[in-house]
Image 1 (cartoon, rainbow, N blue to C red):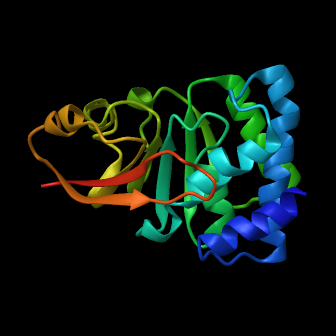
Image 2 (image 1 turned 60 degrees about the vertical axis):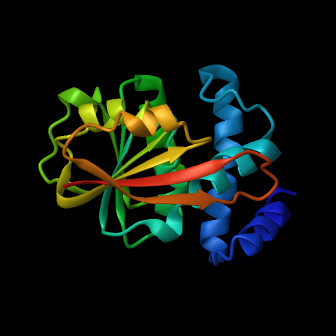
Length: 206
């Protein structure tokens, strides 16, 4: 059932996936659903809704990623990092979260589904010092853009980019972007069967 729906949604978003990738995406939803009962990882309870609200919502930004090394800040159970890692095996994703139960879940997903291009780190973002900076800093429902730039200022390379996944765009939030940063793109995203606004903001240091 989930596999058939996934095929349908991928086609609608013009995304191509191998059988292995599809299996991993469905496997991730199944694990999320199973672990959710004990670990309370997401407020979404229905696996079909997880497919839309977590998998497809994450994959909507896939085509816009530039670079090889990414960090997903406040990733929770691994969103958007795990779906993006599955679909972009040539890129590496660090999944950062401060809650141990979420990190344990991610590591189990990595082991069970054989995802080789993710690493999970349990840390608060301001305390995390990467050995190597990132081409892209991702956050989905993590914080305001102002807070994101404040907490994550030390993470991207000089040419790196911040990717903020947002619902509706609030003008007052955009107005509070700190000095020295610039929004280069505001991209309207379309997610199958999701009748809500979705946007991707790309922000760079000037």
